[in-house]
Image (tube, rainbow, N blue to C red; front, side):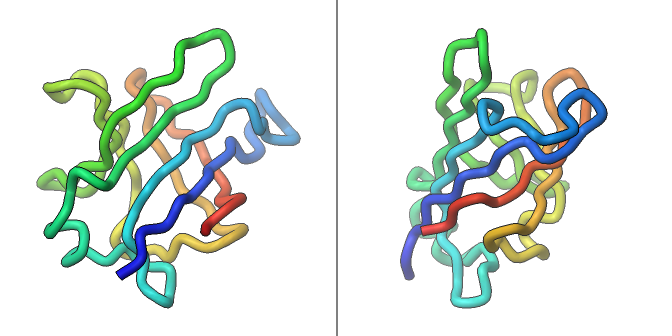
Length: 118
């Protein structure tokens, strides 16, 4: 199973009608041929599932993609306080042009577009 590097960039929002390449995530996940997360490969080596968050005027955050009882999240430190929930990661393909919704730690839900998947 191959582990893919995926770049997500902020899609259109009222605040950013053109989206924003400077608000992005870089993920490393095992994907199958259909672009779905390979859960078995993830279970074998969860430490390889990483995330890096790029945001202007903030330090980059590095962490892990984790599975929780109710889905998936990006986690940057121990505990749940900093976790960002990722909707439908297990049931939605990750392919160029597809969208992923992430709930920030403040509760704001933001759309991100897959702009790279290698």
